[in-house]
Each structure stands twice: as structure tokens, then as C-alpha cells.
Length: 308
Image 1 (tube, rainbow, N blue to C red):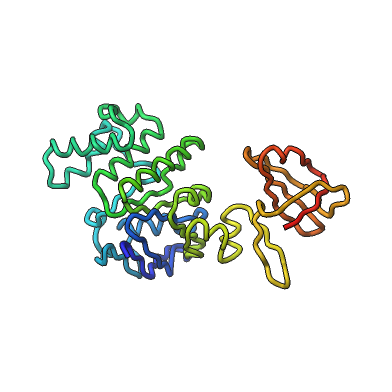
Image 2: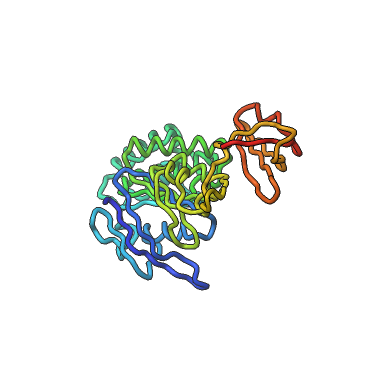
């Protein structure tokens, strides 16, 4: 394994932190750490980056124990949520900042910084001040500054959380393409389920400082290990069949209007490409997804029948 995490533990006051963290990453993989605020994602990322010391456990990179090695000697770079750019430096100076610790001439530093500026789509912005840049452009500078060091692992802590919805989608598409082109291993922290599913080779779902499930996006979505994972990854329905709870995703339920139907529409959410209906039969409630304009046919109070 390229990166191996073994039995990591870090407990703060009030028993908050992480424990029993085990997972590994192959070279060139993009792994997302997914979970709600306070579940331990950023704590885990900071331990991998060397900014926090674990109470217990080991971190191996290419079979080398890096648990006690300082951040600057780990061959790991981090892109923080706040970007952490230097406002008194221009774009080029920010990107090449870490290169001064490498055995490179000033000319080589400039050439390398300009190369990565071009890679992230900011060719010609080298003399711009940070204050002149948009949020998306600042994000690209932060990425270039991390990538120019050609780290073995790139850590990203909710890097798109400060961007608007449209730019967020564009940036994650760019990041995925960049990651595959450069063949770099990445660990991406997010609380956004859609983001994790769309960008990741594997997803690590976390809850209360522990890992609930690790798998491909498809495995996590279609075969969640428990109700927590199922409910965290999109809408989910659990139906009791033969004494066993079975997961039925909203898109797998067929629905039709029927004045004699046993189900009533009690809520409706228009999501653009699809509509989510919440329906009730006595105490039982289900979510149903309807694709396209057909969702316009349903109104609150409508009686419906369903099949699965």
C-alpha cells in the first residue's frame, strides 16, 4: 500500500477525537473523508499532515514510518479551507514560496512556479496580488502552491466550502482531471455527500471519530453497511420485509396518482432535474424521486399508489 494508516487515536477533552482508524490508499487514488461536522475528519487530516501528534497508531508512506516526522519532511502538502495565502505576496511569489527550501536556483523556482500556474489555468496572473483574485482563482493558487512541491500525498480540507454552488461543481471537475493527469494521491475532506460521490475513487464515511464504512462511491450508495451510512448518503427508505429491514432508494419506487391509493403526498421538493416527494401511509413514510417534468403533476394531499 502507498499510504497506510494503522489504529490511529487522538482524544481531546470530553472524549472528542478519533480512534480505531485503519485504512490505506493506493498510489494515484483520490480518497474522500466524508462525515458531519465534528466527526473527526479534519483531526485525521491534520495527523496525516503532521500538524497533530496521535496518542496511538502509525502512519506509513511507501512503507516508511512517518508518524513522528515533522510536516515539512513528510512529502505531504495541504490545501487548507482558508487557502492560507500570503496577502503581501503576488501570485507567483505565493506559488514558489515552498520551493525556497528545495535545492533549486531562483530561475528554476520561477520556471516551475510558472509551469504550475499554467496547469491550474492562471497563466498570465503571476504579477497579480491575492486581493485582486476571485475565490475560485485563490483556490487555484493554493492548489498550485501545494502541487509545485510535487508531494507524494496532497491533503485538501474542505477546499470548496467558500465557493458558490456553480463554481464548486466546476472546481471539483477540474481537480479530478488534474489529479488523474498528474497521477497524484489525494485525501479530500468534505461534509458534502454529492461532492464525495462525484470526485472519489473511494469514500471513507466517518461518524463520532470512527470509520463506519470504506468503499467505492457505488458501494457506499447502493450497499451501505448500516442506516447511518444510508441516511447520510442521500435520501433513503427502510422497509420491513420478512422481519428484515431493506434499503429502497427513492429512485427505485414507482408512483402513480390514484384516488383510492393508500399513500398521501405530504411534502414536495423541486430539485430541478428531479422532484422529491414525501408520502405517508399511516405511520409509515417514504421518499420517492420523480425524474423530469412528471413531478409537476403531483401536489400536496394527492393520493397515490406505489410499487417497488
